[in-house]
Structures are given as structure tokens and as C-alpha cells.
Length: 421
Image 1: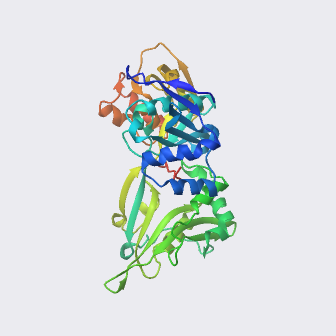
Image 2: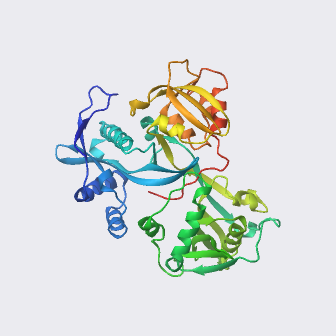
């Protein structure tokens, strides 16, 4: 990639920053800038990349002040479960600006160049985890869903008597490395169940299974459920040894749980919620509508804390909107504002039904006037344009247009990612 001068059009006095593609040799300096910007350990980032290389150097971008690197933006090429099936997406990461160069248009220059590069690769969508919630909306990203951290006291951990249980299933406790192939198989088979999940290659699995706290007895374990046809569920967890006032108060901390059937999921829940010498279980990440929220005998006892998950960006609007299913027919005209991907800006007619969709430019009067970030938020089918219309953040020229499009975009299960990048 060649160097390209970039400027923030929202600021007439903004300097023109040079943005160029990175190389493998640039990675230590890019990592130094990123880690300083996010206040994280440079050594840990470099060690992870040395042991489990995941950086795609031809997707690295550097912003320069002379010869000095003052900003970075990286991306991974992922396959993500999307409405309608797997889709290639750009997983944006490693975004940071050197602290002395903030608020000077560096990030804007990087974002504009990155979006153009992603489009050139033929990827219609970009996704990211945001370090701060107020940053990426102005670049056209919308928060598409949240994930849940849940805590349950063991005293209240009984499941419903009608929860499905299968006596043919067995559960084994093992070192993750010993059953890695079976873990990967379960994850791969469960992957299509929820939009937002990412397929994992070898190095990504190594990062997931990395045990940062390897001391006994709290090391990472794998509970693996097998049935007559092979593995069908697993949980990655550790047990934290605690005592309070002379009584056992251990904590089960669940990093990840995946299952291909409801009985396998029940078997895992009953194992995790009934470990001896423990008083509570913590599930670090769950979908908003996870089965645990309804299978407990007393669901009110599950204490949940929501946090932002993936932000979604339509890089090629007509491509992204035409390449997904719709639950009901919809024919609507969208007037879209998009400062950082101007090829998306303008009026588009979306004609969609259960048999497919077509998106074409139009001069017809708009039904909805909205920002690209609003479409990103709604794309996975669970955050609504109606809420944005009620808040006055988009313009509904035709009454009911937002609700009709929300209905057409709807997906029945809450999205979930569960993979940091």
C-alpha cells in the first residue's frame, strides 16, 4: 500500500497526515503507539504476537508525523456468522493515537483510509470492540448488541425440573489442550446458531485457551459433554479458592460455554453450579437471551451486568443490505448520510422479501433519513431504528417506516461474539 495524505474535512485547519501501509518490521513500533494510547502492556502484546501470531501486516495502517508513527489502525480478516450465513468481515483493532497527537485529525485520517481499503478488499462489513463508547459513532459504526456478565449464588442455582436432561450424555473434566480438537468441533458446529460469532483459526484458539493464571488449583479446565454421536458441549472455566469466616466460598469463573443441544447445555450448567466448596458462579460472557436466563428455577437470582459488544459498520451499503435475508417484505427509500464512506451517501431504494433483496440508487422521496451508524446498529436485527426515531436521532418521513424496516431486519436470537480481537 502506498502512502496517502489524509485530512479531516470537518476541520479546515486540520493538518494533512500521511497514512501508509505497515509491514512486519513496523509492528513493534505500531504496538508501542497502540499500547501507550490504551494504557496496556506492550510486553504482553508483543509476547502474544510472538507466540500466537494473528496480526495481518498487510492490513496495518500507520499515521506519520514526519518519520514518526503517531497513529495505528489494524484489521483482521474474519468469517462472521451474519443474518443469512457466514460473511467475510473486517475486524478492526489496534486503533490508537499517540497521546500528544490526539484531537488533531489523526484518527479521522486512519479511519477514512481504512474504510477505503476494506471496500477495495470486497468486504461489505467492518466490526470492532470499542474502548470508549463515544468514539466510533462518528465514523459510521453503530453498537449492534450487548453481552452479559452474570453472577449466581450456588444456594439459588437450582434448574427447573422440566429442564431437558439426557442420561446418554457423559461429562468429562480435562485439560483444555487434551481435548482441543473436540472443543474446536463443538464451537464450529455451534457457530451458526447466533449472528456475531467469529470462526477461529489455529492461533485464535491458542489465545482463547491461553491460561494467564496457571497456578494450582485455579488453572483453566475444560468440561466436555459427549453423546452417542460425539462431543456436543463444553465449558472453559476455573475455580478460584476462597474462604470466608472459616467457610468455603469458592468461585466458579466461566470463560466460555458452547453447546449444540439443550440437554448438553443443561449438563454443563448443573456441573458448573454444583462444584464442591464453592458459593457462586460467574459467567464472564453470555448472550442477552442466554438459556440460563430462563432455565433457572428462580431466574431473578441471576444478577446480570450488560456491556457493549460489537459495533458494526456498513462499508458497502448496497452490498451489505442486499446480501442478507428479511423476515417480511419491505420496500423503502433510505436517505443516508455517510461522511467517511461517501460512496454510501445518498438515496437508496431497498426492495426486499423472503426471496432476496435489491438495493439501488433512486431519486424518489425518502421514507427514512438516517446516518450510516444507525444502519450498522440495526443490521444484526436486534437494535431498532424505532428507538432512534423516538429519540429524534433519525427522520421518519413516512410514519411507521422505521418499525416496518425493524420487523424485516429482525433476528430471533440475540447476537453474540465472545471472541476478543
